[in-house]
Image (cartoon, rainbow over all chains, first blue to last red; front, side, top):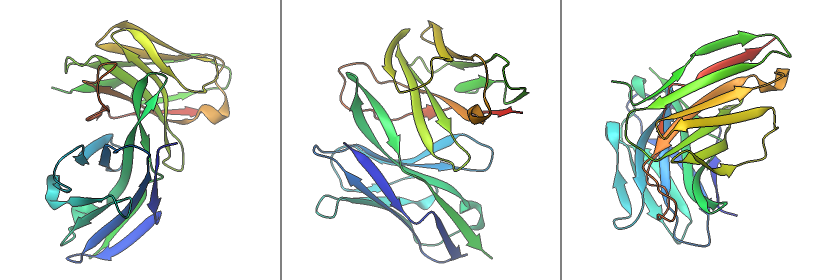
Length: 115
Length: 117
């Protein structure tokens, strides 16, 4: 079954440091992959997505992710963390279900930024 | 203009009661979803409707009954509420059409936090 696994339920970095949030997927077909961000008491907002084409995907707020088929990974990075980046981050994959499609989410990674 | 709006945002109720959450999207999308987020932030799909038709029904107790009066609205009614139903319920919509390639994006509402006492 297609799924995603996020490594690390909690990541803490200093302001200005590199942010790296890890996501590995399992899929027998080329996956459509997503990163969403959830700020406290809010809904989920799309950061970026990989469907087809270029494997390095740029998103909002300076985030980017690279689809690596050989490593079955789609890690999220940002060169320099801001205090405002503190949030919960979710990796997701589109999977077939009952003749339709659904997004299946990873367990989430809480990102804390230290001043 | 809020793209996907849910009401109420907060709901506190007693065990055994029946409650409803409403969702509306103004994006013109064909497909809507209900997701449940538990206390550990885990998100799990419950239902999906495409143009008022149920297309995904996950393993959800039949106390949960979704209703889609039109493709812009998807409501969730919960009967005989239990403590374990306490969660944040998210509505989402997508331009996805059945037989399309995989989903390109989901747009989420702000969530409805349900607390069952």
